[in-house]
Length: 168
Length: 396
Ligand SMILES: Cc1ncc(COP(=O)(O)O)c(C=O)c1O
Image 1 (tube, rainbow over the protein chains, first blue to last red):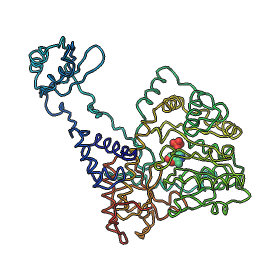
Image 2 (cartoon, each protein chain N blue to C red):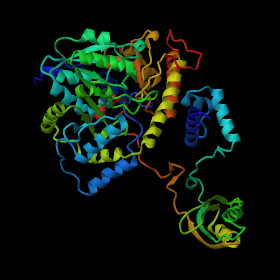
Image 3 (spheres, rainbow over the protein chains, first blue to last red):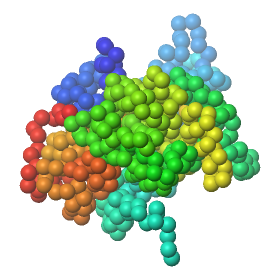
Image 4 (cartoon, helix red, strand yellow):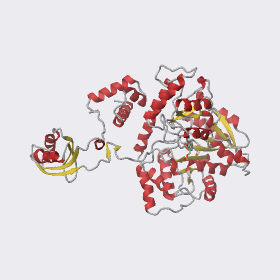
C-alpha cells in the first residue's frame, strides 16, 4: 500500500466511523476518487476484517426503561495452560456480554453486560461469570446514567452553533 | 449629527444587506458564514475557565502575555522556521482585524497607497481608507487562479505606494499561489521597497501544498508583517485574539497605537490562546482533513449542477462562477436566497474581480452542504444557460 492509499483508507475509515451510512459516492467525493474505487476499498476492508460491523448508537433511555447495563471488573489468576485469552473466551461467548477488554490496573478483565433487569444480570454474574475457573473476584457496577456513547453526547446540550447566518 | 467624511465615504457592507434579509427568514441553509463550525476545543475553553477561577481578570502588558508571545514565537519557528523575538517582534492583538488596522495606521501618511489584490476580505479597503490611505485594487480572475501577476502589480504601483496587502490562502477565493508566483510578488515588493502585510489567518487550511509563509521567501523577512490568529485554526472567532510578527520598528509603532486604543487583548482570550497552541497538531489535522473532504464533495457538487468552480486550494470557501446564468452576482445571491433558500455572498462584496461569482462557505456540516447543493440544483435548473456537467471531476 502506498502512503496515498493508506491515507485514503484512513480517511474513509474515519468518515465511516463518524457516519456508517455514508455511501460509496459520498466517500469517493470526500477523498477525491471514483465511486467504484471507494466501493472496492470498503469491500476490501470488510473482507479483511478491518470493518467489523455497522451499528447504530441508540439512547435506550428515551425508549424503554427495561434495559440494564453493568460494568464488571473481573480478577483472574491465570494458570499454566489457561491464560487470560481462555478465560476471556468463556466470557465473551455469552450473548448478553457486550464487550470484554483486558486492562491494566487493579483488575484484569473489564466486561460490559446488558440485560432486561438487575436480577438477571446478578444471576448472570453469580451463576455464569463468578464460577468460571480462575476467576477470583468480580466487582459489578450498574449503569445509572449514560452521558456519552461512542462520541455522541446523549444528554440535552444547548446548540453549539451560535454563529450568525452571514459573516465576512 | 455631522460625521467624519472618511466614515461616510465607506460604502455599506455587501454582507450586511444580505444578513438583514436572512435574519427575517427561516428554513435557510446558510453558506454565508465566514467562520469555522468547529467550536473552540474543550481543553481550550477549560483553560479560560480555569484562568477565571484563579482570578486572572486583570489587564496584561500592552504587547500581551509574555508566555503567549513566547508560545507564538515557538509556533512560528516550528511551523515555518521563522525566528521572532517574543520581546519586540510580536504583538498580541484583538484578532487579525485589529492588527490590520494598527498596521495601516502605523505605515500610512494621508494619501499613501496600498496595493490590494482582489477579490479580497471585506475589511481591507475600509481599513486602508480609515487610516488615511488609498487602497489601489488589482483585480484578478479565476483564469489566473485569483493571484495577481507581477505585471499587474507593477502597473498599479506609483510614487505613493507603501505596502501590498496579501491574504493566502485567501478569503473569498481559496487561492494559494505556488512558490514561483509568491517569489514574483516578492520581487516586485523588493524592487519598489514595499512593506508586505501578509494576512495568513488560513495558513493551516492549505490542502494541496504546505503553506509558504511570505516572510520565509528570500529577503522578505525584513519587509513582511505576518498576521495570524486563532479564529480559524482553533475555532475561536468570538474570543478576539490574534497576533502580528514582524520587524521591531513596525511592531513598536503598532504597539504605540494599540496601547492607547485597545490597551491589551482580552485576558481570557490570551489564556485560551496559550492552550490552543498546545493542541496537538493531529487534532488540527483531523479538522483540516474534514474540511478537505467537504471541499471535494461540495466543489464536485457545484460543477455537477452546472456552476463551474475551480478546486480552491485553501481556506473554507468555494468561489464558483455564476456568469453563465446571465444574472449579476447580487441578483443571483438574492434570488437563490428568496427562491432557493440558500444564503451565499455575492462576489461583488469582495471587490474587483468578484462579479460573476458567489462565495459559498463549506464550514458547515456535510448533511447541510448536501441539502444546500440539492436546493441550489433545483434553483439553477430554473435559470437559462446552466449546463450541468456529466463528468464528476472538478474543473480547474
Ligand atoms: C482574511 C481574513 N482576515 C482576517 C479575518 C478576521 O480575523 P480575526 O477574527 O482574527 O479578527 C477574517 C475573518 O473572516 C478573514 O477572513
